[in-house]
Image (cartoon, rainbow, N blue to C red; front, top):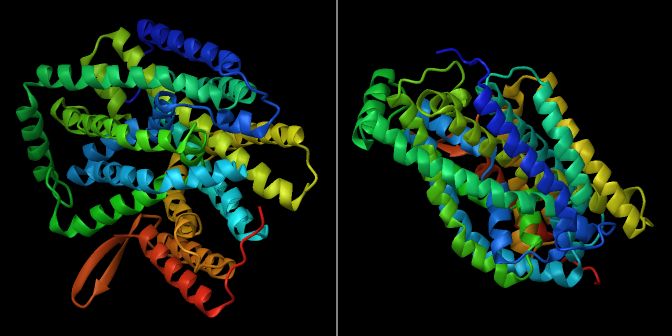
Length: 493
């Protein structure tokens, strides 16, 4: 099967129609829940007025991305059961959100914090450690935005269109309506995106197995395929994969809501109770993710062969569905790139403006100038990610995204531990952060940017997620240095 299909006019028409729809919604969003968009909390947090339903769609929209829809089934297609680590990860994360994020929301609301680095600055004072937290968030987010472009690139190629121009046009449009409407745009588009994705997945899990002879045949075909393939693949985890699987799930869960986009979605909620309710209802997306992952096995049973596993989902839909549905599914996945990319660029812009530009360059900046700066930075971030994809091999974005998870975990102690203990100080947290960043980066580079490192304990070998190893070192250093150095001074509000 060729990786590039001839252009299908029906599928392309449906795709363009839905893309135009979300573009109109994106520009209209500035009029929705009206606020003064010259103020950063209105542009970058939607005025903190999103209720349970909107927040549910928004958090789901930026947590379950186009790359998730493409990459999770692609990983299952390539290695089998190991690819399902995303399921326990999304199960672990919501009790964490329920317990921690309402407390953070209350402090952020009371003290007018817009970013995680604002919170760190409010708790510890100073400007350099909050700047380090902000820089970590921005750097970890850039390849994440680039990967949304990868997801969109894959579905556009699945429609038979090659070259970078469609991607550039799509992101110019995204940049314009994000600039105009701020967080309201992805919040509004998330409604359309999530409904479309649910329709696509429900249709796929109902119709594809029926066409392939049922789920029993799908699993038998996958089992036979992986047994023939050999190695660390199979529809059941190998014992040697247990610690890697478990640590990837735990580390990913702890990192997930440290990212600027998820933090932005949480802080835009209207109340702490809204955050709690969403932690209760968001596991519905975990069910969706499990069903999406099964597409990997279905592609094996359908005899789909592609040069790159990332092309698997579009190839599967092109093989088994009529043209109009192929266009609908492609639009759903492409819109699943737009929503998180918009929120990620807003989150990164908020961090740059509040915690790098204002304290280090322009301490007397007005609120209006602050919002204007954030809008401009959101454009720069998007086009930086676009250049990343256009001029560098995709592999770099994927590898750097793995590093992004390792890096973003290192701000966990400063944000989460400080909610529950007064024992940590700036010196301890700053040094712990530095040790975690250096150790995590060093281990990842030594492994060729693979996410796990083999720990040798006696004669046993335990592959463990590098982010967790670095976080453990970070925590130890943070507490030891804090005990040995003067107690922290909380900044006045």
